[in-house]
Amino acid sequence: MKFTEQKREKMKKARIKFIESIYDFEFVEPYLDLQINNGSRHRKYKFMTLREFKELKIDQRKTIKELHKEGYSLQILKFCSRFFQGMIKLSKDQLEKEYKIRDLNYISKKYKIDRGDMACLRQLYGINSTSGKYFKRIAEEKILTQRQFEILYGTMLGDACSSKEKRIRFCHGDCQRKYIFWKFDEFKEHCNPSVLKASRSISKKYKLDNICWRFKTKCHTEFEKCSKLFYQSGNKEVYKEVIEYLSSLSIAVWFMDDGYTNFNYKSREKTKGNIIPQIFFCTDSFSVKSCQLLIDCLKNKFNINSRLRKVKKLKNGTIPYNIIINKESAYDFFDLISPHIIPSMLYKIDYEEYKIWRKKKELLKEAENEKLLLTSE
Image 1 (cartoon, rainbow, N blue to C red):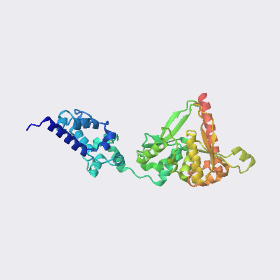
Image 2 (image 1 turned 90 degrees about the vertical axis):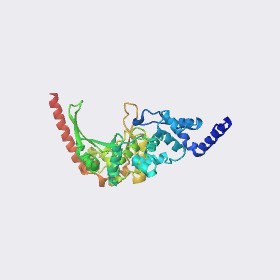
Image 3 (image 1 turned 45 degrees about the vertical axis):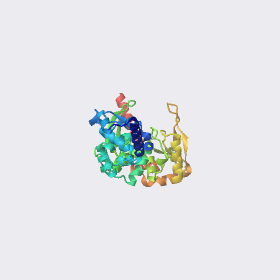
Image 4 (image 1 turned 135 degrees about the vertical axis):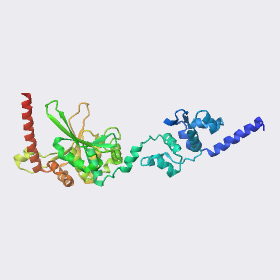
């Protein structure tokens, strides 16, 4: 049966009208120019965008079968058709949320979407592919306790740092060996047993041995979340979201990491008086904005008054700041953190312990000087 030109034009318009009635162009608009590839198994097939599919299918009135013969992947063609028709209703936010804890096979079954369509949808939404090892780790990882949370955020204010975003790295010198052993004990269920190690290096200036103890955790969702909170700008800084996690235990760990107490030893010994100690936090690496957030946290959460103090200008020209606890809050601050201070760190808050620690340090320094003298001879 032959159709006249007029009849053909009428049929074309009817077809376009039908397609337009079943295709959701408004929903598809943001994704029209994003390319979907065919994966390693189907490299012989052409890549395609949704805009190309629209032009070939609607404007040129080609069928799926014809386009497949021209070298386009049948899977992608079917996906484009279903996506245009609104048959795939999983949003980007939903897929991102689900894909953090479940693989595509599970999501495919849950939302009754073809597995091949799920792979195309992930590409279209710009969500990176995740290996099976990730989901195995998610299934096996242990939940952090509240205590571990508080210690984690406290030590991230201090000496701990991110290791490839999903791990946390801890490092302390040999003089703080007991302290890093305590930290390892707190997080050992999230570490490999043999990960706590000591490394030795030679001081270029004094030609003496330096021993450093370090360990890092396994990959964990919460460690990754913590890292992202602290490293939002690339450098480690403090943000409002971090403040929410801080407790008295967090502040105590931060103080054990980066805190220092000036007991005015010589004046005390000379006058035998009870001089109010000066309490500092070494916050040189933080910006003024980060320091101010911590000052506000100490005041609003714990009723501890503190202020900023400039320290020595750095070689790059920047002027770092330390946080100093005001004198009227000094003993309140000690009361706040003292229940959480471990025995090897008591010298930071107790004057009698400080005197013992100071004596040991002096003896150690004398021994190092003697060793330096012998090596120089």
